[in-house]
Length: 305
Image (cartoon, rainbow, N blue to C red; front, side, top):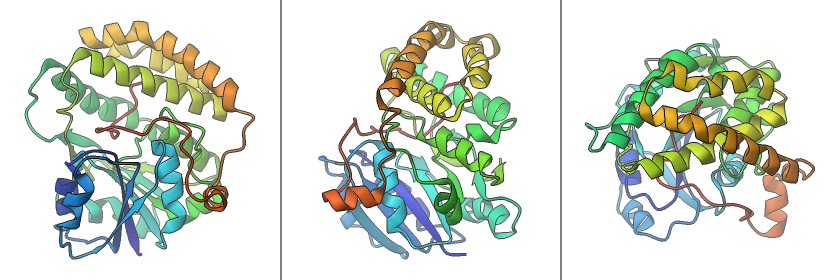
């Protein structure tokens, strides 16, 4: 199967490290698309200096992460679309392990976990690393619809039949929305523990940054759950995370979750009657929309439950 890797970027020079790891894959990608959400730093210039063995393209697709990913999908001609984030580094066996179940006909969507890229340099980073390990072992391993988009592979026909990313989900949650729609359409989702990548969370070096991300991701997840009619099923688990993952940051985050839920409910009510804009609509207008904030460094990783 032809595999195309999509790396979503916004002002993150770590993307060079990510692309170099793709150049060392035992099963190399057929093509790599860096989908740039509007970088203004030196990231793009650094990419130009690389000389990878695979076909590398950079396309400017400004907008939120959901908008950028939605615009990237129709630009790729491949049997499998693979998503990797700019703050992740893939070991050499990663892509072969991730694609294995799809190429064997055992799954349509496959995702793997993350491991810390380096020892934590702050208490906030240590918390995020510990939370991600717990999240994959105790949440994703039991429910594959909780797979984050970073470090995942999708048969192209999932997007053809279940639809593209919903650009209305500007605050996050576009990954959960895609997972739920794929499952509802009858596609098989699988968590593959061996398909792990390193995840650099060093930018989350302060309590306020962690709480800001928790709030934004909680808001986005609420919108995705409301859209798919599963909020009543998902909310109790999300609200009870602090009781299962015991950490003082998680206790603080528990007080933030009802606020994020209310904000997500209000945000979904504002956009739910809008059409889920298609890349074809964007092309007719001359490019992807700019309706929301773009993602920052570290967009990958689980939306906190």
